[in-house]
Length: 639
Image: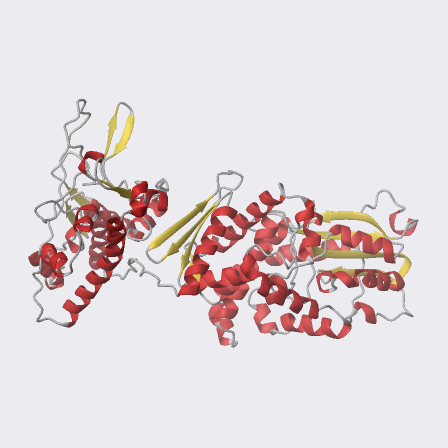
């Protein structure tokens, strides 16, 4: 196919790009000496100046933003605002950039009743216009030729509102403003001409009938006139025209609708956004909320990650305000928000939270460690207490341990087979390369454990190991997390009793950093609440102290394979999400799927940032010459 594109503006270039990408031979014709239309960049004394496309946002320009991100175009966050200054600075002045300080740039307006009336009329104007448009839609007999002057006159708006908000002069007629200064500058670097479409009723009607001629005789029309005359309308028109020629369907992004909160949600919104503003000291988190964008970016450059969340329901703020981190999990599970980056968005959010948590911990004194009674948000205190009590009630007694474990592991072998490898190994693998097969890495881990400790397999609770038998080797692979903080000494007592004098005990377990352990055991969290009831991820010091208190064992070899868990979890997540349809066929709903997606990334972030460990430790009694008397028969290592 050969296509001629007339006009190298944003519409023409986008359609040409899409067509050429699909193998179409394209020729672009442009009467100007440059391409891009309004998207024009010139070089003045070695400095590139953008004369168009300088301002855009996620809300009204979603397709342009997506295209720029695809091309890798650098974009910079800017705080957009508007301000008013009348009569050469001697009249009314107000703005929007810095909240009340900008709104009341003239302090006297705090006591000015006309200014307060204008603020009320700004709110009323929006409501009146929406009602008027709805009335026009519902009643075609109404005269739709009413002017702005007639509208404001019939609704009784004040002079202050007309001058300081609508920008109407003495004639009461609207006029176009310019970015040019009111007088000609002394030094002019460059002059250029640009044009904008002038909207009219006839043009609007014609655009509604465009489909009748679109594509006829091999001619496709595209331009900013397909919408409101802005660059983003031209971009969408170019993509739609190219898709029409190629006979393919494309999901065009549309401006999101404004979310209307209830009064409780309004308060929660204010509280949560203030919290994020103070909490995010490194990294960047962007909330896309209907027609509004909130950017929380720290000044510390320790973390360069950036993540964008799309809020679908204002319950997101209520849940975070009343349940803190568990509210965030609940909001994700119920689809109250999602991520622009479907693959790594959730993971990056956790890594940003980890970076900020550790940054704050570095300047926080040990006497200020958090417990369930001091959640991150004070409004979450009640739910924090509820979750902690629930966790305490799940303590791993002999009966409760079986119940806790069954809640997770009895979900069915069919489910686990959809994300584990063929060995059905549900623990950290050991990889030699980034693209190594999961099964190969799991077999390497198993071989490594076997080399460290000869195994005889016995399926029972550690407290039910027969006392009459002594075992040469005992191995525990990631079951210690189900023992519980208060049962660690009992665990080592049982191992001490069952282990032969020259025997070896090998443990593999996930570990919490020692510096956070006392805080960790005084709180509930997502894993304890949603995934592993009664779980306790012990600190290394907790293991060694229990070992010393309840046995004669000592550590003879230790290594941390935790960094391999990130890759393991990403494999599991990929397999899990690739098999969503089969998981649903087993009877699991979308909330279950999102819960497990949250689980995989929640854990992966901890291992990727090295704030969680996964230890393999070999224990023996002093004087075990039989196992360690040969200096050439060393304990094997992952590295």
